View 1: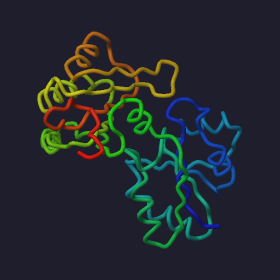
View 2: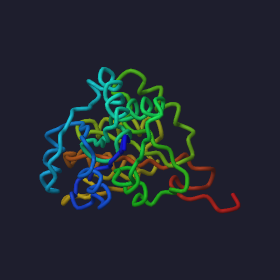
View 3: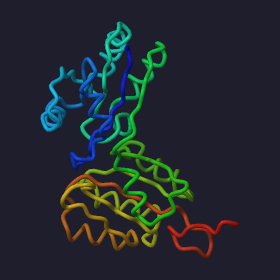
View 4: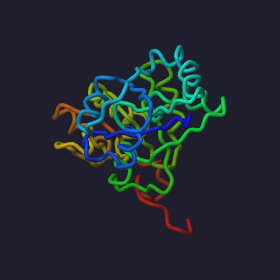
Amino acid sequence: MAKLFIVPTPIGNLDDITLRAVDVLREVDFILAEDTRTTSFLLRHLGIEKRLQSHHKFNEHATVRLVADTIAAGRSAALVSDAGTPGISDPGFLLVRTCVEQGIEVETLPGATAAIPALVQSGFPCDRFCFEGFLPQKKGRAKQLQSLVDEERTMIFYESPYRVVKCLEQFCEVFGPERRVSVSRELTKKFEQTVRGTLAEVLEHFRATEPKGEFVIVLAGRPKSGRRGGEPAPEND
């Protein structure tokens, strides 16, 4: 059956892949991979041999139509990223949109993503939140941060270990050093860690301890008067 499957892959611990995801990867005609080397390692772990095709941010604009046409011709494909759910700060959106426009069925499997575990274990309200992903590295970064100054929902950001300290410094300037934050790194891996506190406290921690691994920063929303940042609102508020 001609179909595109969106298949989440583990963000660290390979045992986190679902049984259904394994079945899909075994059954599709080919797999679209952000990095074929990373996906080959996963497939070897799962005992799967399958044709891989590169599909990443540097070639997706040029190949997305051809891939969709291949699926429409009767082939089934699975799209995977290096880790987590494709389309969430990873390639995937363009292919999904093209398939939808061509009437090709798209089926997305539930599975791993770094944002939700980091949010839930932050201790901040998670009934309403906004996902910001990776901030622009340069142009537009300050403007985007300023647009979030009055955001009352919990905010989720992704950041590289090389920019964590600079990012927390900017957050202190924009949101204030007393705003509450939870920073998780290496989720699901052996050295998983979550550091919680004010922006000033967590910044000092990572100034003293070199940041390593993949980071998720969960920032408390702007507190209402008389309430600490990250404290849930009363039900009748």
